[in-house]
Image (tube, rainbow, N blue to C red; front, side):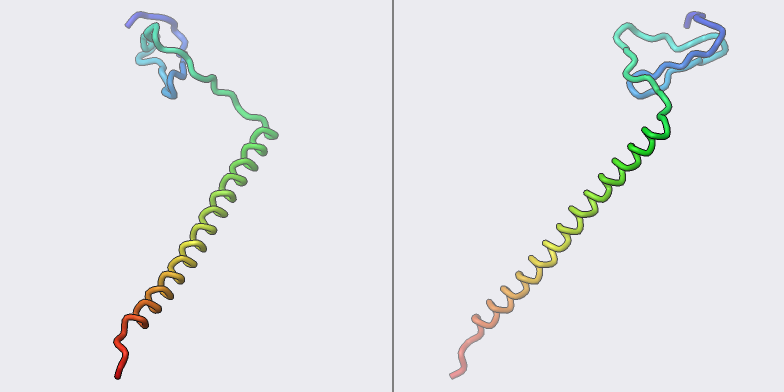
Length: 95
């Protein structure tokens, strides 16, 4: 490790924080690594929009799940009726 700076510097690389290992020393970055994103605090308006989008997504998933649940219930009911009809036709005719 080479000495780079006295102040700690933190980089975000591929979703992982790379920072000081010891005082004054930093993780050596290879040339193939690059900074993927910069962390920036969201404004209150941006936070509200993000929360509304998250709520919309959760509601959409809940709606899909409820529709699938109702389809399964309906299909099971129909399957039960079909099995009962099959059993009633399979019974031998007394006679």
